[in-house]
Length: 303
Length: 303
Image 1 (spheres, rainbow over the protein chains, first blue to last red):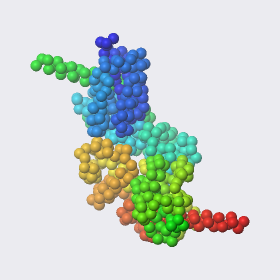
Image 2: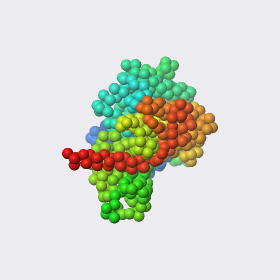
Image 3: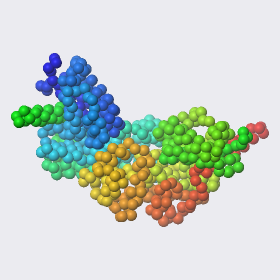
């Protein structure tokens, strides 16, 4: 038992943190899930989420946390490029054998294309893109809510609320989306909506995205404008990504399937289904890093 | 000394909280200032700011806090219309003789027009309007950042950052405002900007508004678009307000003077200088409430 080796893939996203534990032979042993791992909420917040889903996966596998010392971790984490967050995470006294960190988009891309070259656009709570071609990783958009993430669910929810609040004072167009949002919140007035959501996390705003799509289906002008504006941005991102000639391009994230139909045909024709999820990508990433360090180690022995 | 009566006017805004202590005869005794009193940050936060500037004013007057029991307070507070905040503030065991609360725009309006009927548009960190005509108070916009407050400084700062971050990935137009923002932040890359401002208060975003105006003076397309969009919204608000036939209309707030020149001529022609500030308005409000309750009390004695 002491000699067994494990690999843990962790997808630390802005809304959810997911872990997947496999044996060194690749057999699935257990999975776990926790809330947001976004380092914008503080590095401790990320570490708590990472450890929660890790221990859940270990427990689901019927193992004890003693195995963490035999476990190599691939971690894809939202917001890790922020310099101070990155440093704080590097200094983390983690309980694992080793940990390899990268952006969450990177492991999503590896998962979507079986570890091979490719590109992804992710529209969930936020929006971002990544191309991974011939060793060159290029990122697109992201930047978090409310600074960036145009076309993502939180951006949509905020836009819709802004419009409907303005409309109440006749400072904007009054369309059905205002009533639909009130109905969704189940509150009588806008003051209650503001009270509830003003300082909320992006994931709370993103819950309104389905309301925006539903209003668009009823030809609501405001909803149509929001979605078309978001889709135009995603298309622009796709065109930039396609300039890097990725062998495959996948559209991921919770809003992916809904957003797909709003993209223009030319962009849409390039999109292929992902092969696997981001946790699998995190495991592929860990294996690539382990192979890299072992070949470097072997190289050293030779000299 | 025990028989002296005092009136304290407090302007509890989203960025600053200001107090003005006068004698019952109206002589200025002392002023005080504290940071944001925005109840969106929690009611305790507001109460702390209110008490800090109150004690500063009392101390500046060379008095002790024992006088608070002889002090009637007029308080104009940002976000007070939010139902749960309002309730929590009503339950506050305050140290004053009595306290009369209203929206911060209301006291600003009373101050601007010497306690008489009139209307105001406030563009500072946020943006909002209020008309006070023949006992009818109507509010326009507001709703806080990022849900509302279009045309305010925080909204401008966010818009400018969104544009310049997008431009870096060629997902938006690259104009000089991007360089100007980097220079302002004195950081080498966008990741550092995001790290610093992503979860910042509206007042932090509003500090970028002068950069937007400076870029507009250099004919930066993005800056011009942001300011024109904001100004169009403020003009729309002004036209709605003018429908209530206020005898006077003033444009207040830190961005007021800069925004004025971007408004269309017809709207601009209606704008008059304010007579006094919001703390004076808060004192006028307290006096109106005291006169109201004393006439009600007298009325009761008669029956």
